[in-house]
Image (tube, rainbow, N blue to C red; front, side):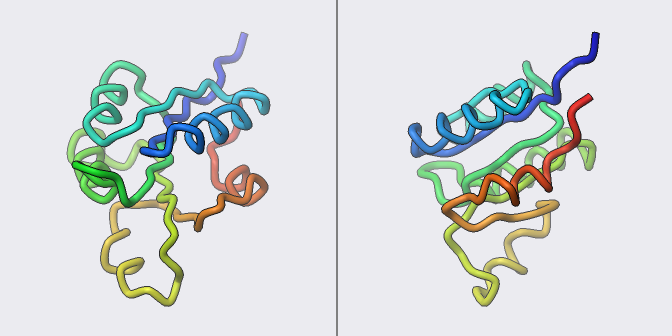
Length: 121
């Protein structure tokens, strides 16, 4: 029996995190959510996801800091996808997203997200 790909969705907007998680679960992914950076890191430790979708602007520890810590702790084994309202023309994208593998603009296009996720086993 194959194991579903584990995905962690991190967004301080609980309804958005739940909506994305629900879509991914319907596609067969094993999904958990976190609503802030500290909760995300704690969940990472116990859950060990293959992919993390991170909101950039969250109170407290934002997505960029979470990404840096994930890279320090887990290296490049985790696919990190930034979820942001920032556009390509915004210089923060190239400056701040060095630890991310990909980024998507809000609202997240489910088809674009699906192309970036690790394949289901």
